Image 1 (tube, helix red, strand yellow):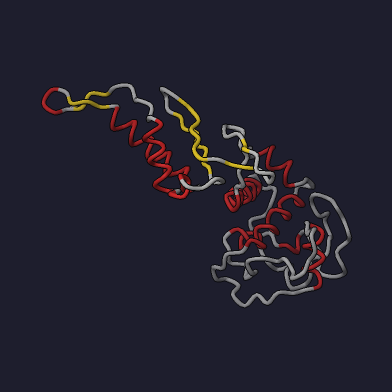
Image 2 (cartoon, rainbow, N blue to C red):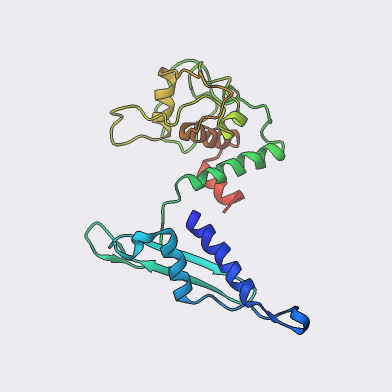
Length: 232
């Protein structure tokens, strides 16, 4: 993410620098922007990812665009588990990681703004405070799914701004190889976390996992579908 931003900003600066030449009395005259060279992009990528020049499995793919040009630049190499090289290009898949939290927050804000979700909505508006969570493989948890009494008063807003008091992760120790949505709800319904830092900033992956599912449940949809309908 940082690399992509850096390349974008640097590409703009390169374009701006090249888009002007001295004119009468020192005034700049606008010219068509010139596409950065591969050498310039390589130097920029290497600045942010020095190891890319000496590793067999580090790579970067950057898309850049201006009114005058657009292109894809790639550098480095990637291998699969068998050691075979993987192609680099506009279809190369990279793990986004926490960048997807901005998608979740945007979806939440979209439904709040449209009135589909109350700005004061709580987890308890969607999930019950008693019983054991049903063993479901649904992509969203239906209304009434148990989450545990310790969590029902947590607002969706506090999940979005990291003030819910929830810890970073809700994955139990020795949880096994599969840990999905239903397993998360089963674990939470029987394991109340202490929310001692409620109201204070505390980064929480668990909080955004719950926010995503609450938004999906509010629309009786799975998160993947909502994401493609409203964001992607």
